[in-house]
Length: 242
Image (tube, rainbow, N blue to C red; front, side, top):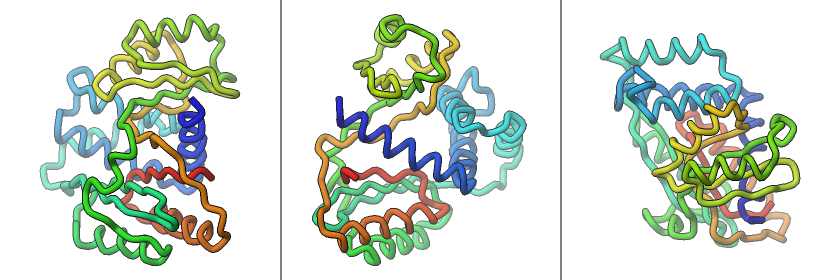
C-alpha cells in the first residue's frame, strides 16, 4: 500500500499548491462545463456532475460558484466546447508522465505540452507508451483529523459499498475503487457524513522511479512546473518517487 500513500501525498500536495494559486477552481470549472454538456445540469441525473461537485466541495469551492458554473454551462449554447486530449511521455531517466488536458485549441495545447517536456529534457511519446505502467482507479482520501469514525467501521462501509481496498496510513485513510464503482462508493461515504479530503478517478503508478542526479531532478521539476502553469492542463500523473 506504500505506493498508494506516495501517490496520495504527491497528489494532495499538488492540489494544495493549485488551490493557493486558484488554478484548481479553473480546472473544476471546466470539468463542470463538460459534465453539464454531456449529461445535463441536474446532479440527480448526472453522476459525473455529482462527482465534480464533490471534488469542488473538497477543494473548498463556494456553493454559489459551483451553481453559477452549472447555470452558465446549461444556459449558454455558444459556450466554449472543451475537448479531452491526453499526452504521454518521458521525463529525465525515463520517468513516466501522463498529461490530461481540456482544451478548445488542440494545436496550442500540443505545442505547450511538447514545449514543457522539451525544456525539461523529456519527450512526448505515442499514446499508450507509458499508460500501461499505471492503473486507473478511484481514490478517496479521508483525513484522520476530520474523521471521528473507527477505522474498522469506515472500512466496512467502504467495502460494503464496493471498494476494492482500504488502507490505514499515517495521517489518512485511503479507499481504492474500480473506476466503475467510484461514484457509488463516494456517494455512500457522503451519505454517512464522512468528509473526504479528495475523491477522484486517477492514475496510480504500478512502480516508482527515482532520480539521483541533481540536474535530472531540476529538469523533472521544470516539466511539472511548466505543465502546472498551463491552464489547459487538468491533471499530471507521474511515477517519480520524490
